[in-house]
Length: 233
Image (cartoon, rainbow, N blue to C red; front, side, top):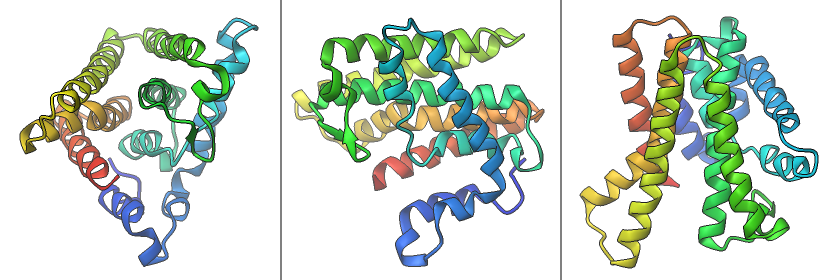
């Protein structure tokens, strides 16, 4: 079920055309504000799961959120605009942690110094700490996923994480070999970016109580949206 007043297709269009239309991302997602605030709060609380000596590095990585696209998709699919459960918040936190972990590793691979108007973790703390911190974020996300009463959530998160990392590897290999055909490009986008969009929609629908057919329809929507987003980005 999609939150009243929040059309996910229009949401993506807003990201692409916000300057032209004058409609802001935050105003479009106003029905989800309580849910997204809860996700941000729970994400910050994850810092306590790490050893005190490395908590500051975890906090640095976990507090550098962007548009919250993936949590918003979880909320839309789970009808968070009309109320939400702790499990729905946890699902969004898990997916955002996986996403933030991939960004930590991306910045190392790209040699990036800045992300979202501040130094990247690797520029701030070095590559060695950043590699291991990214691994810690992946592990914590899977630990949270294992707390659900069904093993299906952990299986879906694990599979998506593997696919995202596989997409990164394929992109690196194709870049080095100068292989740039359309089919390979779209396959890489599906694994690298669309996978977490799809997971957000599928898990949101699952926790929101939708039947399996609806979950799979939402998953396919997430794939299409993720590919479109990455092509634009």
